[in-house]
Image 1 (cartoon, chains in turn blue, orange):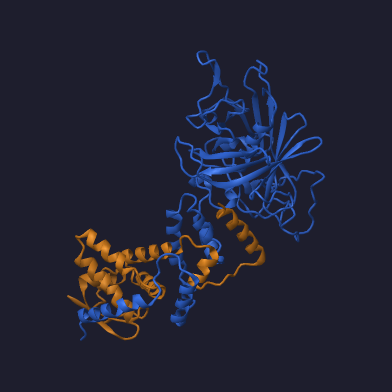
Image 2 (cartoon, helix red, strand yellow):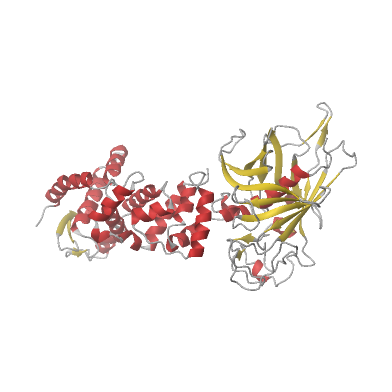
Length: 402
Length: 147
């Protein structure tokens, strides 16, 4: 009968040599060290590839839980790029921003924000290149740090009768034909009315907007580099208020892609689940759409809102006149520090029926904090992309500007 | 009370019951009265079983000394990848929660900071994505790793 103690003592002296000889699974390895492992563990070469799914899941759960903020969140994205089984599990584990308040994959910028808290971002303007950069704030709190995760970039393109802001996942890839194209904001000639276009259908049955730059899609064999079209998702209009240019302007944003019921208790907003530029379907059974309560599956092909269910309308909260300070004031809770006619807060407007508590919540807040620096805070039911586009219109409009 | 465990390579280990029942798998066998004879563990080789039993023994001995236990655990898990893999599977099979947790954490720590390609290299995993999927992933990682 063997004595466990003597075995362990024997192993102890042996195992310490083993650890010294072999590559230690510590900090990121160099490829030389990784090669050494391959040589030594010839028999175990592909053992990790055969790791039982439940163990892989445990490992990925740990990574997802600990790397919750950027820039470390990139490690979660990396795991989703290893192989199919890793991607499948990682995507299953990662919750949509609506539930977690966390943006993870690029598609997150197209998905509604958190319900109970504002997602804090900031926008940097580069006047010379006419480019705007949207970042997710990496440090929350009253101090506006410049620490951010890049989300989207927008470039202004002036045309004879209108202005376009092309919005992309990559600052250097701004052409509409690029695979990083997300959408655009188009302003009318006067800069009083704007339309937000999404490069992807926002919901089942969405109709493509015909324009010169749209290609009609008949086959599924499209190169991913060609956008399948542009879908109008929101309209923004600016007007002077009764005080003319001496008072704050009136802003209204009609979000055709979101039903007004989205903000009511139990309401849902359409959520895109992945990019499929090369494979757009005009039929109701969009494989990449999902909603919490299977709401979307019951829609037949046609416009999102049926007759009795209106779309979401956002209006700017009216500032109060501060007699002593002699200026218009909104409470930005420290997130906006420089007075500017561009600053605004949007709330849902009770178009149909009486106003309830859901009409008090600030859906989008935007304001100046520095020469070319602005904060942007948004929440459900709009997405970072929609929020960014709305803010861009505030830059562009000439209404009530000195 | 001592139990006898047999590894996949037919090595017999005599272990105190208190130590062995750190494994929920062995614990249920004991509770069901199936532990009178040698318990075969066909999924664990002797090398790994020795390490596992060392873990279990120390968790009994150092139960009241948290600091000492943490020091032991940190040192214990500094093993090479092949051993780590075997420990992971053994902890899963034997259902030893704290060892499983620690081993999973070790693997997670190993992967942090690596690109998908580096992870594949480290763990010898084959890239089985289609060209279209690769393109999507390339775009994703470009965006995620953007400074």
